Amino acid sequence: MSLQDPALLEGPIVTDGGVAALPGPSLTPEDGARSRDRLRVHDARRHGRRWYLLWLLVGPGILAMLGENDGPSMISYATTGATYGLGFFLPFILVTFAMAIVCQEMAMRVGAVTHRGYGQLVLERFGPLWGWFSAGDLILTNLVTLIAEFVAIRIGLSYFHLGAGVAAALGVVLVAFTLSGGRYWRWERIVLGMALFNGLFLVAAVLTKPHWGSVGHALVTGSPFPGGSLNTLLLLVASTIGATVTPWMIFFQQSASADKGLTPRDLRHGRYDTIAGGALAAVFGCGALIVGAALFGHGGSSIQGLSGAGFPGALKLVSGKAVATIFALGLIEAGAVALLTISASTGYAVGECIGVPHSFNNSPRKAALFYGANLGAALIAAVIILIPGAPLLSIALNANVLATVLLPVALVFLILLAKDRELMGKWANKTSTNWIAIAIVAFISTCGAAYAIDSFLQTVHLIPGG
Amino acid sequence: MTAEDEQELVMFLERDQLVTDTSRPVPRAALSRRINNALWALRVFVVVVSAMVIYTFISQVTH
Image (cartoon, rainbow over all chains, first blue to last red):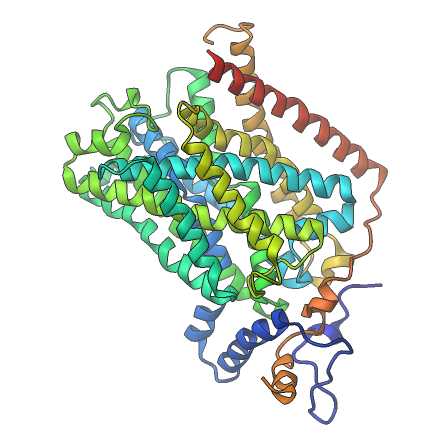
């Protein structure tokens, strides 16, 4: 049976007489909430209100991309700038976001065409072993990343003399607040509003008064190429990739696209959403690198970004109080938005794999496991950062690398789903998209493996430098 | 909401978008031997490299 019967996909379900042909089973509240959102999309399309239509349809792409410009990622970019200055990594960030756009477009397309989340499709299409492997891999990396988000929020708050307890409470309350509405639309708009404050990193970059000629030169030529330790370079390359393409983004965008109610008619706007998210995230990520580069030559390479005063304190000395304050606020925002999106991807994965309701359009009572996993993931991470002596620095530094190592599995299944004609019909990947996606998987796998193998060999003293 | 309201609203959803439809499992994919072998290679790759990362992480924490 083809899953893409055109009769089922084009427009509302109406009979010849123009009367709605209702399906047999009764509507769930989730259907009712989603149909209200689709009614507005339908009206905007019918009346030719293009900008309003765009406003209604953007969301998952921008949230996935700006959610991934999270605390550890921004610290990783700033560390790169502080260690190497402007150069190779500036255009490298743009390249990694271009890769992210290719991957995320596939996730959006699969979600819009099949109306199913990634976890559900992998489980049903490739069997429970791979389904649970993907979900387990996601839950592990999400938990590690959520701890790192709390660490980032804590660093930002520590600049304002607030402690770990405030960071933990703030994060958990925020997640609980956004979950309280019982509507996907409400959740998405709140997080979207918060995510736009990721632009603080660009503001901070401008305030550091960089030499724009050098920025342009670095962007165009990618030089100077970084020297020094191969292990540090590989860590930064793996971290930069892990900061732009991760398993949770794939889970999140596909599931959120389905939850939002996107359909094949919305694919063009879904692409705009994904590209806009990628462009904004790349610009803001470059902003964080430029801010970090202000510390290059001022002992910036010696800053352990997640310990002690870290970046905000160092920036206060070198670039002034305004830059430091904005950077600290940016870290709080980046950590908070990622908390919301990563917790949501955990909820989607758990709900989809267990086969229970998994939509923000359900009430917490109706989708208790979805909401419980969402909040529970944030709670566990919050408790861990309150444990005295917990190795937070090491956890945070390894979060992006672990995500990079586990990413190839998520990407391979995404490609298999997106190229699947039985599932996707005429919206399946073109041959060229398949080859580009395969090249991205090969590149990411090589970078992640290179760092992991190099670090391991150093740790077991088979090569010098450990 | 009345039944008439519900009927009107459902017109704006595609049939395969309804919860009753998305809850129905999609058929299992028929994978070629080549793809199956590639997936097994991927599984081995991930387990080996993840073990290296976890070992390195534990080593960092304990030293």
